[in-house]
Length: 278
Length: 316
Image (cartoon, rainbow over all chains, first blue to last red; front, side):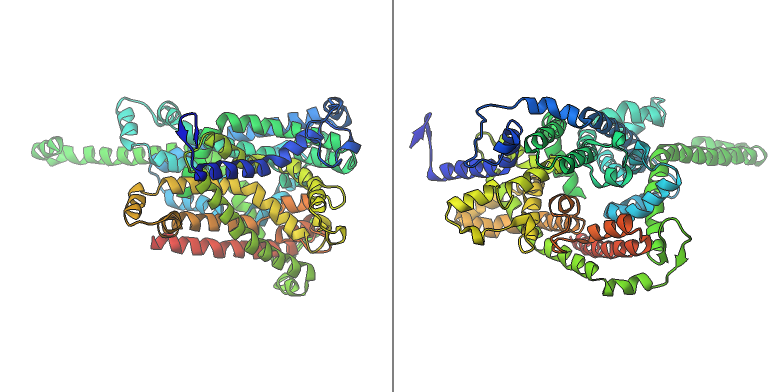
């Protein structure tokens, strides 16, 4: 068989068929969510599934903003995510520069401190961490979540691995030219480390935006809640309002989708390289 | 070199103070360099030490204490440890964690490898397919878990509706999250769906690292696709597979969010896992010492896997 001048084998057809079927299954929950978000609650479970609602209920997308403070939840989550991501990028790349390019006493000991905790599940120390935050009076504040997410061993490790691959001669040349270490970091290392910074940005953005257990432990006041626990609260309050729940879920997904699609090239490369080095 | 040798010729009296100054300034320089380096590390390290290292040490101590978070802490010795063996919920949580891991790790691994091989072919729209497979991994868990619950709703969900149209008797219909025999299956299916795209990407990187000459040599020997897969792809991917296994195992030991969202650990204790038990003991019962002891069990499970990985890396 020939399509558009190309020979098409059974194998090619099979590969495409398989890829399309699997993709459809993978994306089915999202399609269902989108479709249900435009239906009346009583129509959500009608079978056979009406994928494109005959009377789309756009009102659902209006109602969710008044039923729960969705705007506030999104604002809280964005605030947390942006601050955590910026702090993470800044402090990790700063520390990683010293670990990769400078010499100082106890360098290996300090680095070992980071490495040793990479595999340590957060759940092992979440309780003492909570008690510590409570002692600091940070319970029910966003600052608590910022403190616990902004300084990770993973960030330092990822950036350090990348800086190791940048030739040391570059730094030495800059030193001879009279740059101090801070200038070398800002003017040479940072611009060169865009792939690593993008990877870390996406990882941090996605984990902070989607974090559930952290906000659930620390934030009990409604006005402080993030989109994840806000959504969860909404689901338990209006458990039968399927259409509204789905509309709110779609809204919660959009920011991640945008960030992911705009940075996905870097992400795939980043996962591949950082994953295998780890 | 030339300067020091010329000073030696000129005479000792002037050389000694100069050398002293040189040594002093070198030491000062060293201290200065170290201070600069520490200033780079400090912003991250202080936060890290206070909010991660400190709590970790505290967690180990707390496992041997009794504390409800408000009254005085008392030393418990090994009380919390012995309690583990009498706590039916802990024993259930431990075995459920193991079952979750033993089933979901190989299943996710096989799916991820299959997907990677499929999407490593030169096909039109490959990037789209890869992105689609990866998306569940980054999608917000609360949102997708609620869809999952609706899709797998035993009475009205489309999955059971499809099974019904395929002729399955309503009496034999799986109850999914509401059924103690199916709840674990539901949670595992969700985990595979959500994370296989991520491991697919790692496998893709592994596949691209295989030397194409190996396949050419296999072609010359007249190997078919299956033989090439078994004798070239699988052995060449061994390091990747090992890495993926370790990552998946650690992730499975830590599973919590999806279970909280889909089954709340139930029905009964059928999907109660270690982290869920830690959470319950700490934030529901406020038995902080015992909760830390359960956390210690989780720590040793993860440590065991990490040690295996470390040994293996050394061998390579």
